[in-house]
Amino acid sequence: IMFSIKYLQLLVFIRWFQRTERGAISYDSSDQTALYIRMLGDVRVRSQVGFEPERRGSHPYLGVDFRTLHSRAESAGTIPARRIQRLFSFQRHLLSSRLLRGAPHLNPLHILDEDYCGQAKCMLEKVGSWNFDIFLFDRLTNGNGLVFLTFNLLNQYGLIELFQLDMVKLRRFLVLVQEDYHNQNPYHNAVHAADVTQAMHCYLREPKLAESLTSFDILLGLLAAATHDLDHPGVNQPFLIKTNHYLAALYRNTSVLENHHWRSAVGLLRETELFSNLPAEDSIERQLGSLILATDISRQNEYLSRFRTHLDENDLCLGNASHRHFVLQMALKCADICNPCRPWELSKQWSEKVTEEFFHQGDIEKKHKLEISPLCDSEANTIASVQIGFMTYVVEPLFAEWARFSDTRLSQTMLGHLGLNKASWSAMEPEASGSSEEGESEPGRATEEPSSRVLSQGSQES
Image 1: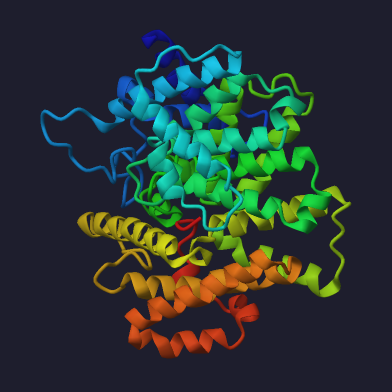
Image 2: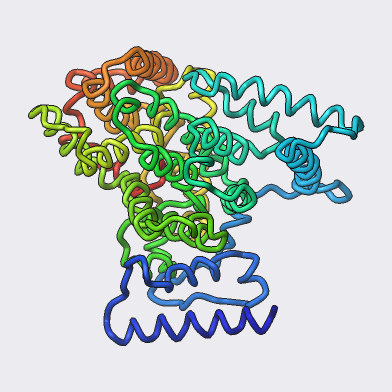
């Protein structure tokens, strides 16, 4: 094993050096460099290899272990929660395996575990509801919400049978995806990925999309939602750039996180060989990347302007594959930042979690005497002020255009929740009320001159 790891490290260095000597790095789907980097970025490998990124510039890479960045110390003598979670997960895996094989259930001992499975199954019967409580579902599945939800949706759409996906490979892929999310992150974790996947399912069921999307489109949409923040470090792109992180160098400071999420997903697809039986495996990887890259919030105006132009000219033809793909991109963008459009009891939890992650990054920047990123200074911002700005300059314009495209009950429900939630935050931040009212005057055009404090987050919220 150690020989293989050392060989992998040497191979990464050789390929990196060759491309650096040529003055460019290739990013096409045949290039393995990013996949090797992803593997070396995995703490399970780096801890054995002792890999240290190159230190350059006045603010060298801080050497932060992103998998423990937001972790809290466990008290001595306690059984790690992850070990208990895996025990229960294994029990459920045995149960589901027996059911899939058609074998009768003979072991009545794990009553509590089965009871939780039963409650989760009841929730999945209402997985298309916009009020779906992903926090409760994740608790009922003992932290395995992303695996259960995605598997259920793929099966519900008939995609497992249609594409003849190997059940063992699919299960392994989904477990690896869930494991590659940093659940110590307050916001960018597997629960967020499951929430985005559930929202994507709601959008896929909207009449315009349900009537025109192919099974391949649906497969891409669900997989992109489940993997769109894979291996997110819990800090934003500007942080990676100013600390000279090796990922920033690899992707030339452009859509750094989104490129990494995409390459991480491709790495797991190839590792599990999930689509090895499909002739269009390369096409799947490219289109998956196109969807994930669209979630870069710094390109919000680019996608929104294009969407608005299509709607103004009424020239979106969903019989056209490229137009369907663009609509999928917009749907994923909406799903990614839909938290302010959820009912208050859910939306408030997400707002608190993302702001906690922002402020934690700001604390790290203060500690290392780096410039504090916008919205990350807990002394200059509040949860309410961050959320009001985000809703006004990013969420409202996007969902106003989405409602123009898909004027349905769901769209009106989302806009209704958005208005109520913004009013609730404004009540907690009286001094922001005046500025937010100005932003409400033309919500559909609000991103023509967006607040730099919001969009400069790079991809923090995406």
